[in-house]
Each structure stands twice: as structure tokens, then as C-alpha cells.
Length: 165
Length: 325
Image 1: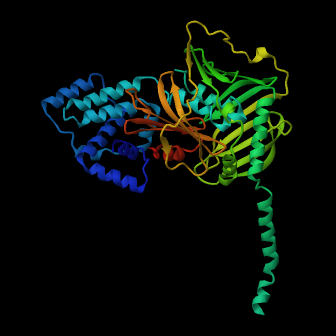
Image 2: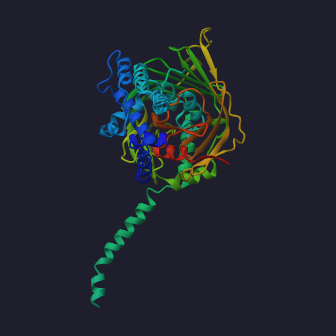
Image 3: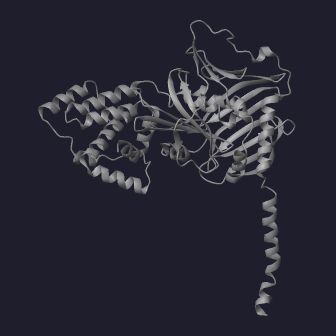
């Protein structure tokens, strides 16, 4: 389900799959997930990104006037597909945040949102990570018929992509 | 009578059309044997010829140049590739293994090279797939790196593969340019020599690694050869023409044991890696390294990584049809 919602936001689902994902969104659990992803997306895009100390201030205010992160708020957010897709591709680590934060968002604690923002801001500050380990590319290259006719040239795919670690 | 009269003038047109169809059918449609023979010649030249040149690698708006030297010394192959832009990288092929040097991070990756040992030529099945799923035809003569090359095209018959165009030196058969293109005829990836000396005299020193002795503070990551045995995994819906050529276990990063299946249509391959999902964060979804698309997903407690020189839809389809036999 989590994957379906993520793929929906990436514009990655066809008609029938999208319908199923929309049905999922009508359940409150699915909607939480969707909201959570958008919070992360906003953070990654730095749309009015949080200022210093935002997380603690936000958490404190939430504590003083407990507000449920409700569907009405979520529906007003406009999904903007491309920047989100870019953000996910550019910061591979975001996916890890998505998983961990999505779980924490189901937690009714008001600090969950603050945690989500903090976590994704920390992740985006890290250097761009490699999409896939060269292990896989190198192991694949040995069996690719392209190696037969092009020699070691195609190994550039694996070595130019990363630093070998 | 009237009908006959009407049909009369049509006949020359029909004849012409039929002739045109016959001509079209005859001229560009090379047979599976032709495609396989052409690939054999290119593979043979890549092994036997001695050559040195500068290669331009272009992908996703990026452009990198490298120096490539190839030597066949009494049946033994030596190859050295050094990039000229960005952090230094070096790929050395010697004694059947491939070593990749990353001097900035002090890492050497050693890969046992099994394809050329295990699959010196295409299987009859793969040969048939070549023209069942690609239209193989001769294209024009084009000048590349100062050579009047002969171009050849493998045009896909479905949306599950990319198109491939190759430019070969007509004398030796050696490829001097290779381009992968998508359904809009846009370049996905291209390797092209900007200058090359085929049949050049190459000395052993020219193909030796820059670091013949591993510096003491460098890390050597040796990948174990494939342990070819039944993994119990399969792809239930491989794209038509893709035949399983490898089923085995692979140790990646020296430790993890990963099931590795390879499917090939004769021109390209798709690798499927299945491993228990760990605590490490994984780049789920689609990513791309030049002409290779990658799709990573979680399936139950397993991490499924699918990659190959095929469009995104193909790696995704394969990733979603991995199952236990």
C-alpha cells in the first residue's frame, strides 16, 4: 500500500492501479500516509522550509493545543508531481525517510510531524547518494552481451557512477 | 466490362507496390544468421585486434572521455581504460579478470570475468531472438573517428527493448561507435571513439595498471565467482525473447550472498538480484546508470534489484514477476 501511494504521487500508476490507490486514500490510514509523503516532499523541495528551531517550536505549540493532523489539511495540498519525483531520485536516502517516517506518522504523537521534518532536512543536507551500488552493475556487466562486442567500454557505467564504495 | 476497364489502370500501380514491398522485404531484412554472424565478427574483432584510442561516453546529458588500449598478445587479452575527466578511474582486464581502480577512495574492485569464459558465443535460442524481436538492417556508411564505417541497426519490434545502432570498421569489423536509442529515437547512451588506431603496435607497458602493486592502505574488494546452482527463484513473466542464461549465487561486497538470475535476448541482458532485506537503506524505485535502468523493490522480506540495458517498463515488469518456483 505504501509503495502504491508513493508510486501514485510519482505519477507512476496506470488507470486501474491508480483507482485502487485512490480507494486506499479514502481510508484514514492511507490518507495519513499520503499526508506524510507530502510533508516529506515539501521538506525535500524546501517549500518554505523549516527555520532553525522550527521542529521544537512546532512540537511545543502542538503540545499546548493538540491538533489532529486531519484529512482537511491534507486535501488542500496540491500534489506537484515532478519536483517530488526529482527529489526522490536525487536523494536516494529520502526513501529510507519515507519508510521510517511513514511508520512514525501513524503514531498519534504530535511530535511525529516535527520528527519527520527534522529527519528529511537532515537527509537532504547530505551529499547526493549513489542510486545503486556498483556491485550490481559490475556483476551484471560480466554477463551482458554488450561486453562481448564493446570490450571494457561499458564498464564506464559502473565506474563513472560512483566512488567504488 | 466496366469493372474490368476500371481495374485496368490500377494494375501497374499494384505491380509497382508489390515490387516495392518485395524490395523492402528483400533488402533490409537480414536473417538471424546474418545478425549473429555480424555480432560474431564484432566480438571477434574486439578480442583479436590491437587498438588504442580515445572514447567518448555520453549519457543523460553527460559527456566523458577515456583512453582505451587493447592488446591481444598470443591469445591473451589485455585491456586498459583510463578516464580523462573527473575523479580518476581505471579499468584493467587481464588474465580473465577485471579490476576497477578508484584512487580517490583507495578502492580496487576485482571481478571474475565469467561471460567470455562461459558464453563465447550466442546460443541458437538467442540467435533466433535477435531477429524475432529486432529488425536487423544495414544502414549507411558514415565517417567516425576518421574511418569510413558501415553502420548497422537493431530496431526493436516491441516497446520492451531499446534500439541499437553500431558503426563498424569495415576492414576489421571492430565497433568504433555504439548508440542505444529509445522509441523517440533519442540517444539513451553512446560510446564513440573520437580517434582510434586499429592494428597499432601496442607494448605490454601500455596496458599495465598504474598501480601494479596494491598500495598498502588500499582496500581490495574481491567478488567471488558465480556459484552456479538452482536458486529456486524465477521470473514468471520475462519479456518475450528473454532466455535465462544464469541462475546462481553471487557474493557481493564479499559478504552478502545474493541470488543472481540473468536473462538475455542475445543483444542485451537483464540481471535479477534477490537477497534478504537488511537494515541498510535501499534506493527503492527507478534509477539509471547510462543505458542501464535499475528498478528496486521490496518483496516480502526480500530486496529485488533488476537492471539491464532495457527500458524502465521492462525492468519494472520483471521486478514485479519474481517468484519462488
